[in-house]
Length: 496
Image 1 (cartoon, helix red, strand yellow):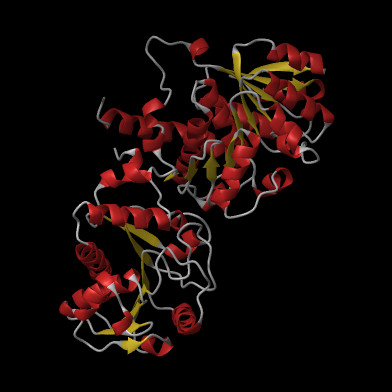
Image 2 (spheres, one colour; image 1 turned 180 degrees about the vertical axis):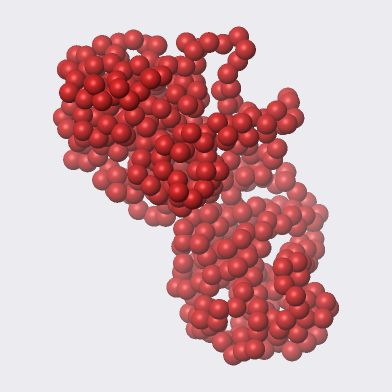
């Protein structure tokens, strides 16, 4: 199984540091560029038959990669036209070295370069672009957008910020993006993820050991980050050792808490109790079998359930309603200092005083807002990674900011981007299932960050396995297949 280091996401600054560390360690920069450009050419040769290709090069190292790719394609018999932003004489360092090896004409970069081309290689700007594209570069990118031909992007589609996925002015959607050593956050965060197409990650000779000096704090979510601590059932275990989750149910939207409770049970919590409002108790009791349904008529009844310390993970919010009772229940749960997951109405009910919620966080806590709920609680700006990190610091909780590019951030600055969720998850109740999975893993002893990461990945994998036509219940029913596949990976992993 790959290691956690393999899942590292490097900002452009961190990638530049990796390059410098590799070169300081004896890896020649010209060799790194040669390997990178050759990988771009090989990606093209593997996917397309020979055809006229336009290689669009910028004035930096990204353009140097383009010169190398052009040379290899021309050597393979492809008709190649190369255009450069600026003058060849202005190139420096490794890019100048490889530009000198290109013996064919170097044309000015512009839309006219694409005339007659049936494929484009976008090597104008790399992941470190810091300002909006303009001038001839913008005109060339606009022409790529309008052309409809396949595009192979070098590192990132030009115009995409590699750190945030934001588009700086304009960017052409790539069919394939070839990147090097490690992916960048911009490959996974929207809208960069939509523009990158298939991302091909290439080893260009940078030693993995350089990551130790960089100490990246952002990773792509996946089993290497949490599988070694996953709470598989033990032969000498029993249900009381697998944790007891308490799920607070709502009086009207009863389906949300039922989904969450079933998800917590399916993911492995030994017992699950659902606290059902008195008026809705018959609905819950009739619908749930493996879940304990307790009638709750007053705040004292809920307090009595909290009084049993064996209920070691508590979920509030799904279908709860934005009522004073919900607010009081959240504060009571947090006051136990046990693991608490907060979703939906348990977050929105504090929109008028978020600080009261944050002050109450006394133990392990995971908050799972979507964008609307997030904005009601957190007055923070920046890209999605920055906002999630700031929210986690401010609240003292792990924040799972949902979306197609879900970000999970811990108060200590660690963050992951989840990329395995299919579009089918945009269906009612899927978020309730996710909060139930988080709670079930908390009950089994996973720390909040790993519980959130594991739950999010398992949620996406189960949805992907089920496929089109997904509804929330299907995630729960497909979870055994996901867990079976995960266990096979765990058994195959080296021990020790």
